[in-house]
Length: 159
Image (cartoon, rainbow, N blue to C red; front, side, top):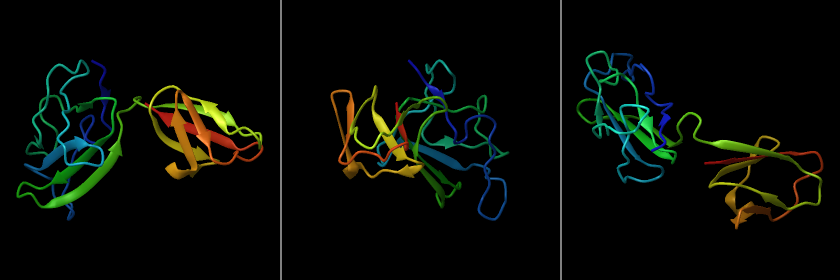
């Protein structure tokens, strides 16, 4: 099974409270992106040993058992709480390091359809995020409702 290093708590990260104290016994919950559906994370790059959910941070506010969090190539939501379940932070739509690919195109002012491979995560034109109502995806093709401008940089992120 393919897993990727998590950018949240991935390797030797140390967590703190909002006042700067070490987050001893803190809790890091993992969910499917945009939901409250628990999503497994793993202890190693082989993805064969699931972590507890939540991950309970050690006395130094770090992830125990090797200090690594590995995640599937899907979007995650992380919720960080202190030991008494007080919310500290929420991180949503997180993907593992290297889990997403990018395809770049250059707009010519008339082309609206572009080939893709994978699940589209986000689309940018000249660095500006494109709302999902400005394009559609079907049968390996992303189609814009209007052609991107001449010489514009089109970045399609997918997993």
